[in-house]
Length: 221
Ligand code: DC
Image 1 (cartoon, rainbow, N blue to C red):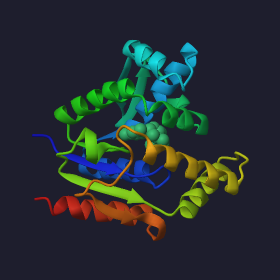
Image 2: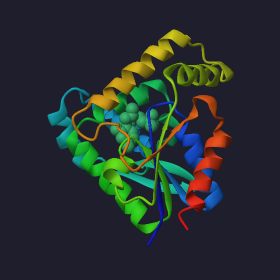
Image 3: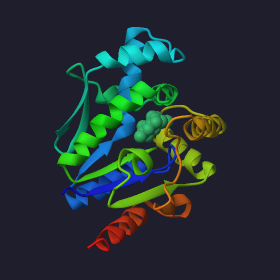
Image 4: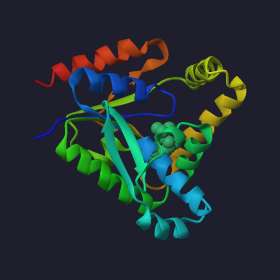
């Protein structure tokens, strides 16, 4: 039986950094499910489908050919065989992913892909519904959060470091909107699974969060 660690939480809580490091230390694969929703959003943009038209999305997503491969341990997302990984980390892609993630047919398709990955490999998987819907039997569940202010500040520093002009108030507003959208959608909204360990990273470094998860993983044995 393969082992799975589920990490859920709102945008900007540090899930991907921590999940990637934990996976690397344990020799598990890191599955970034947000990237799959982002790739599906890109597919709809390219097809000219309105993200508010769920019926059209439901139909079109049947044709979307999204697959995951690993290169030097890093997840790569292929859309129709094209590696689109480098196009997915923008704010626009994130907003688009959040908008289309309420579509039942989209979720069904991506959840199926996620479960297949977890069935064949030891995984650290991060997202919004991993502990609640995708892998309810995960060996370890973490709900990683941080205050809105902390998350906005981290994002601001990250963008500033890359030389991308940005405004912290706008980032904060975007984060609040995305949280609202992810927590209030009808299907699989973001919420903490009852058996998930709550970690608030507002006053913790990524290394401290990583160490805590590794400790919890040790306790499994
Ligand atoms: O984790 P992220 O920022 O890359 O995710 C982008 C959006 O995709 C997020 O705002 C909501 C959606 N998403 C989801 O609905 N379920 C997941 N398991 C992962 C992401």
